[in-house]
Image (cartoon, rainbow, N blue to C red; front, side):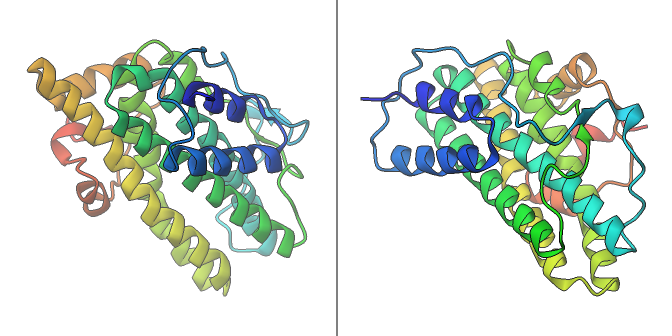
Length: 263
């Protein structure tokens, strides 16, 4: 029987977007059906495969996107979001395949479900780009999204602290304003897509909070101070308000975590 680790590695090793999406969906389906053994017999790759396009640039070379008022600006923003979701597929399957042996089986359940969500998000964003005369890969994209995974490759709590509880939580902060701007511009189809992604991301952040908290409870450690320690160690950016306290609270990420270290 194929193992969940090998299935996750296959997703990470697929560079072509349609293949990655197909393998993500197939892995989730086979996991739900009990067709993948809960075994971790192979290591995850140091970095995922990437398609030839988009061109990946460091943050200081990325072109300015503006605020999405024009169609060109909205296309650029949707492209950037598609790249984030494409990278998020790998982050989720890497989390399941790399750290699944440290946690109960339900940990894999959760992160495989996140991975298939991210595959769906990418697919609908790419479809929307094509409707607008573009496609994923047409514009350059941020090269640094895998840095958080590299930094936390040997620390499951560090990974949970930074990826869902910082990076995805930041999406909760900024997405409502983006949805409103798309609606103001008359782009309701894109606004609906972004709102769907937003509601899914609350659940994803919640998985990070849940598993971080469970491990802390097992060790008798207070989660908020340990989270701040992990963020200071592994996260290169800064936590800047405004925060969407309501959405964060829905995910279990209360202000006691982030308010103390916000800039």
